[in-house]
Structures are given as C-alpha cells and as structure tokens.
Image 1 (cartoon, rainbow, N blue to C red):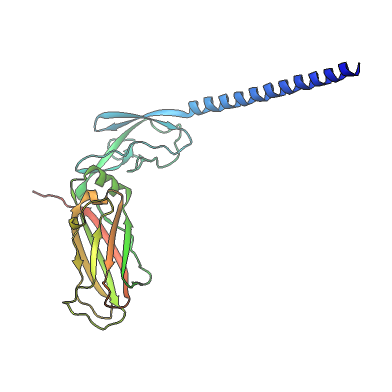
Image 2 (cartoon, rainbow, N blue to C red):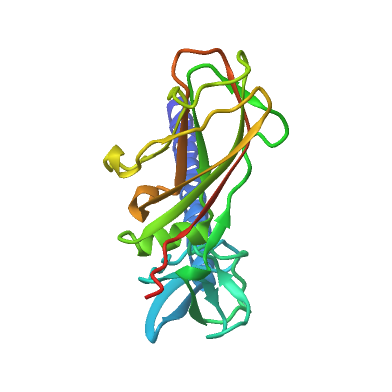
Length: 258
C-alpha cells in the first residue's frame, strides 16, 4: 500500500512538473510571438528619391533609422528631406535619421545636394586655451564633419585643399637661422597612399615670441577617406621643447573654374 502511495505521489509530481513546463513554455512562446508581431507592425517602408531613382528602405517606429549615405561626383549630400528643395531634414549626410522614427513621418523623401565649391570647413582649434610643447614630434588629428566625409567618398579623384595656421615658440633659444631646417610640418596619409603625395613644409625662422604661420597643401581626396586630417610637427633633435598653440585646419575642394 505504501509503495502504491509513493508511486502516486511521484506520478502527481511528474504531471504537475510537466504542466508547469508546458505552461511556462507556452507563455514564453506567446510572449515572443507577441513581441515579434508588435515589431513587425512598427516596421515602415520609406522611399527616397535620388535624382529620380527610387530607393526603398525599412525603418522601425521609435528607433534611429539608417539608410545609404548617397554620394554624387561633383557634389556632397546635404541630407534627405521631405521636399525636393527646402523642407525638413530627416536623414543627415551619414544616412542616419535626425530623430527616432515616428509613424507620422513622411514615407517619400528626397536627397538634396550641394556643390563642392560651397564646401569649406574650419575644424576645431587645437591648443586654443594654452600652449602644448613637444621635444621631438607630435601628431595632431582633426576629424572631418560628416558632409565633408560624404563629399570625399563621392569624389576620391578630386583634390582637397588643406590650410594649416598655427603659432610656434621655441623654448630654449632667442632666434633660429633661416638656414636651419629642423622644424618640419607634414600632412600625413592614414590610408596607405604614398607619403610623397603630401610633401614636407619647413617653417621659417622665428623668435622666442609666438610667431604665426600658415601652410597649404593640395592633395588627393582619397588621402582623407578615413575621415581625418593628420599633421605631424617634427622639429628634429637639435633643440629643447617647442611650444605650439592655436593650430587650426581649414579644408575645401580644389574647384576648376574653367
């Protein structure tokens, strides 16, 4: 009798456990199915008109959306708007939505372009608050804004103009001879292009007071396709620290006016 009782207890436990597992599993399945259905309901197809060509993308309500960062020779992407001209911007030059997507947003949008001649950017100043010094060499990197990166990707065969203005002061000597070629400023490639593409600029003589300089390079746009401008200040090994401040880079495209 005791064995039968124990058997019934075990059987009931197995049945209850099975019902629990089945019920929990069923609820989990139902929950996942509901979430999937809700997500599918939030998916929205949008059409982007790029010079008459329609490009379709799926975006999700309540989330940041991404589309192609369209490129065009001779132009840069201003953004994707709800009108062919003017209007409200919904995607930036990177192809990222300006806000989380809403169901009330339009489903037909238009790519708008700007000419390369319009595109000139002054990048953030390095060491604008106080001077920084270096004893051998220092690399300064400037990040390019998204519209300029887009222009570079669409115009790799064009040339860009890089202008550097800066101030220098030598820390250990009153004056340097103009014949002394120890201070070199070089625009560097980060994309594997040959270094000679960039050339080397040598600073003029200067005094112990800060002296202003400006250098300019014309280089292939492909050399900035990773979205950065890098300039090396290499002063040689003959003197002590050299102080640099107020380094500013301006970038634009070399435009043929013929």
